[in-house]
Length: 186
Image 1 (cartoon, one colour):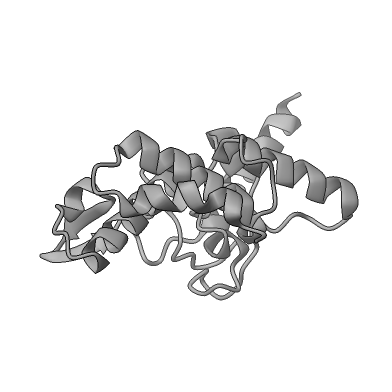
Image 2 (cartoon, rainbow, N blue to C red):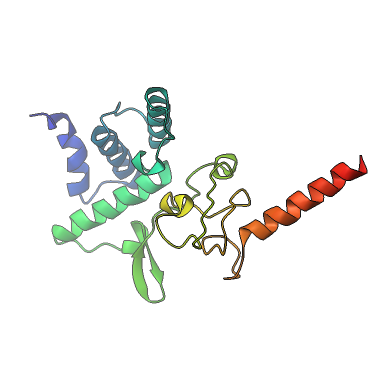
């Protein structure tokens, strides 16, 4: 069968004695198989490989939602899948050790512990929404990142600023005004 080589990776999820390292390794290899890539690539290299392949074959900007998960997200998802498999098998494990957290007395899955990309890449993402960045129409929100100082959005609801009336364009205007006044002094 086409997926026979993955049966030993699936077996890791059935084995109650699997270590976190084994779960992570098996999960990464299964994710690579889903994306039809080399199973020996870690999640970060897999993302980079796909990003490069897509950017070479397409003139369009690569859609981040088509990339595999980050190493951190893949690890957490693998732990969550392991926990679910064990629950189906009748085992009771502590969900807090397998990618879950308590938020307001509710058990919630952790999507990631780290930023989805290095800070310099996060700053290259930008949008220009006019509707407040509160839906998936916002490219930043769609890609799971907060709007940054590079965005020219109005009435942004997707930034680190807690002020609901925060308008990122105000920052840009004041920043560009300062730049133009510096030019006048030269």
